[in-house]
Image (cartoon, rainbow, N blue to C red; front, top):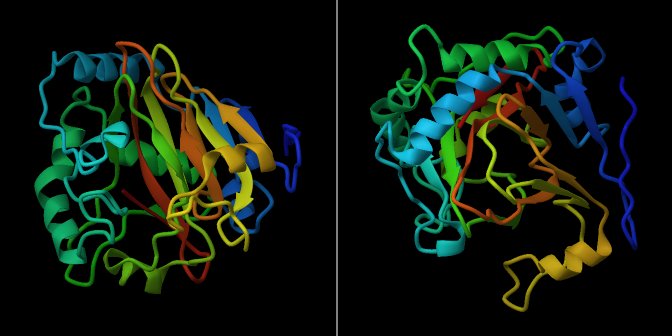
Length: 294
């Protein structure tokens, strides 16, 4: 396995265990999804994982409006975190529009209506869901990678395209979502010890947009919070915990144990938006398959 990059900060409790590899040689990290589950790795960046030129072209067209689409904006009530989505209007996460998440039926209905719209923005002959499944398979330890389906046969969303424009960010959080109603079926199928995010970059912003990962686990008993008792205290987290700041380019992919690690996306600056595509993945309970969705 490539050397872990422990990035030291004051008052460190636990290092962020990060890996940075090129897609041409990933044999040493072919089982890194399991390594994330077993708390051996927090984040891995895979450079040149997908066709960067093609993704950059699609990202630029979407960002400029040359390829017009209808963006969903589930966080519009919190302007600084106004993440724009293509592929669903009912994401598999809490939002400021639905703080406890959507119902499973609403999510699956949105998937049936909107998922194909995200696939349609790519070049003819490119199957993004198939490409993501094949790419994730390189890190699955030989396990098959599959899109889950509900008990009624409806498919989950394979990925969403996300756009963050000038002045926007994603605040510090973790992604342990299994308690939401939307996950009532998935939580019976997957190993719920953590959740892994997968994100590929279509377009990097002019400035900002880095992924910041902290050496703070979601089950730490004394994570600093603001007086409201709900929001994390970013200043205190920055002071107390180790962190790794990761910048990506078009075609790069990262996998993050986001159900365990506190993380955020640094504020965007400039006219060029941060454009990504991604979602979540998990091992099934028997550790024989990897399921992915968004």
